[in-house]
Image 1: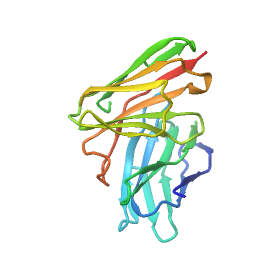
Image 2: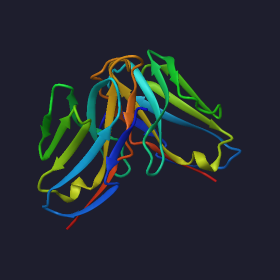
Image 3: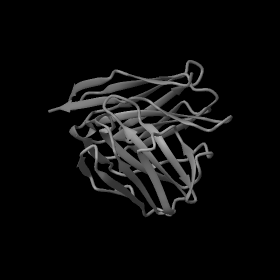
Image 4: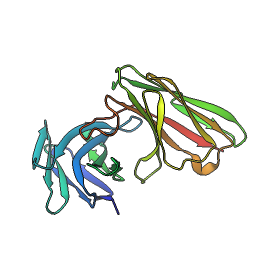
Length: 113
Length: 116
């Protein structure tokens, strides 16, 4: 079954600290993996996209990694800011045999001053 | 902003009411989508339109009726909803049809729907 599991479900950190969010998937065949950021009251916005051959991708203070062998991805946030408080959603796309996008339930991040 | 707008942003309706959600994209995209987002659950794809034609309906109850008059506008007509239909309804658009593996979807801010 094609699934995307994210952990933790929620996370509280202090401003300035780093954190890492996890995404495990069982989607096959794999095409690409995106991380989205969703602020409260807004729609998701894409942060990074990685294909099978890429194992890291950065966007400012956000760095995503991908291990296609173990089917795991992580999103690392460096020097967190209050504006990083949001939900982070991992999305995996299948490549063939009926293209489909599978969403994770998201990790809710709270950054405290 | 993402270039995708949705109205209204908030809607409260009774189970016997009829209402419509509107989505407009200003990006020149060909494909548009409706998603349902419930608390602590993954986004659920409801409908996909490609060049105004419906290409996907994920077993959505008939009390939800989509309409796509052109590539820039998408509606979701609601009637005789249930309290469990209360959720955030997100509209999205993309340049290519969903068959493109590297396609990015641009989301609107959503309509927060409450069914009493």
